[in-house]
Amino acid sequence: MKDQVERLHSISELRVAYKGSSHEMDELINRGEFDILFASPESLVGDSKFRQLLQNFNVGMIVIDEFHTIATWGGNDDSDEYLVFRKCEEKTPEDKKEKIVSALRNKDSCVRIVIATSALGMGVDVLNCNSVVLYGPPRSVVDLVQAVGRVGRDGLPSVALIIYNSHHLRNVDKEVKSFISCQNCRRKELLKNFISDTDLLKFTDETCHTCCDLCAELCKCNHCSVLDIEKLFNNECLNCSSDSDDTIDYDWNVDELDMDFSLSDS
Image (cartoon, rainbow, N blue to C red):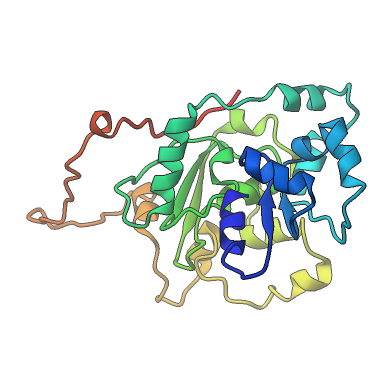
């Protein structure tokens, strides 16, 4: 939300507020001095006084981002899902998290690998991220789309790889199992969970090339290219020259930066 608020601030005469960002901002919100209000569901409806205050605002539209979380975490207040959601808290210290997020926003950052939960990319425009490796598939196809959507936001060729074994598939939804075991195009297998059969037919005659590993094997155009990380996983030689001097030496260490490139949550 912070990124979205910062972008909207560039529009003149548009008053954008982010509830909880500062005491001064909350005071403006309480007086109704805003055009667009960003807030988490907890901060909007978790406070009974603010719920009452909302009745005084001229609300023209309510937009829910990450709508799938309603299905994931929704339910009655006494449900197990609700209790888990309420108890969940981030373990990563705020200062380290800010350093990681700042590095991800900087296209010239020396950070090359970040080990994290799927929560890392939510609401953050990660620059120059063109590959993600998932250790085990997510439980649902919605979570899968969220995870692979971390890459390719710059429009450049990108890839998402899933490393898994039979144990990982024990607790995933049937749609995820179908995606993993399908023998045709994985993209189409994934899309059929979100679009109508009519819209899906539009992809039938398309040449998919390298949209997935299965299509890459079937494509005979001889013009397809794959990323280096795909070659590594396929045991292909990236650079067979023994006298290559292309190795990059990153002359820094984590201790000097005082950073722990990982995120975790309970």
